[in-house]
Image (cartoon, rainbow, N blue to C red; front, top):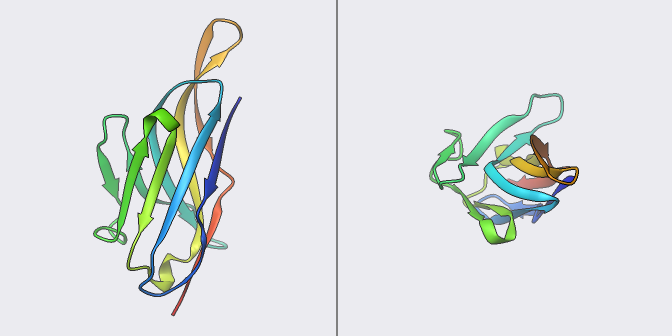
Length: 124
């Protein structure tokens, strides 16, 4: 019923910047918290940044001062501005969102959705 699509990944040199976008589409009633996670091969997915429906943000210590998460509610979109990128930032980045969606003709249901991921590669 709901789909999250990430974009904006790519390859950059250390010190460069990238801006990731994630758009939610489908039978959406409302979206609560949204966030970005990343995963290296053979490792568990880790939190990068989250933003609540009220705009409260939190970041992993490794990205504080370099990354900024924001959202555009009318467009059901969350962004991750990444500056001063380091080689250790290289990973697949996943979008996450808590969504209340239309179920059937008049019911509502809540679910946590994940995007397919977008690759970010930072060269030294």
